[in-house]
Length: 131
Image (cartoon, rainbow, N blue to C red; front, side, top):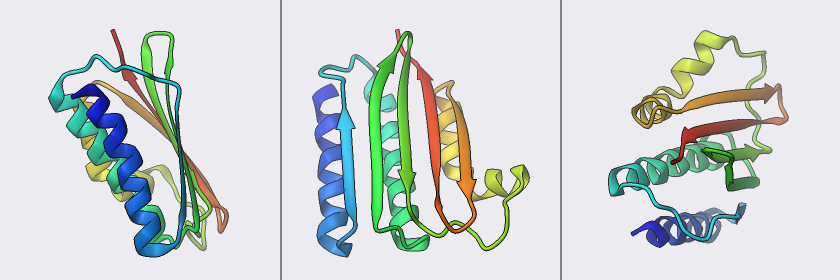
């Protein structure tokens, strides 16, 4: 099940590349995850929504995703080169754009930071407690 999550993340990136030609670079320094199945499902859905949004809506041609352990946290960092917006995005708009992702992160007692650069893509850093 835990290795299933890692394999699913790699698989999804390859599927997106086949469908769109976008380069999805997934890196992981985690060999085994010991998290509940429900948490694995939520993490996959977060990844799926962020990668899909970057490629299909923001027209990203490159997406980088890193999954790693940092102290007592599981970290998922996703960045892309999609054209985010023509104007700066305030915090309220960021929250609305990521409502589904935000809800999933909070279900996992996690936090996120979103950094955008007008016309240059974005980076989201998600941290989830890991014991």
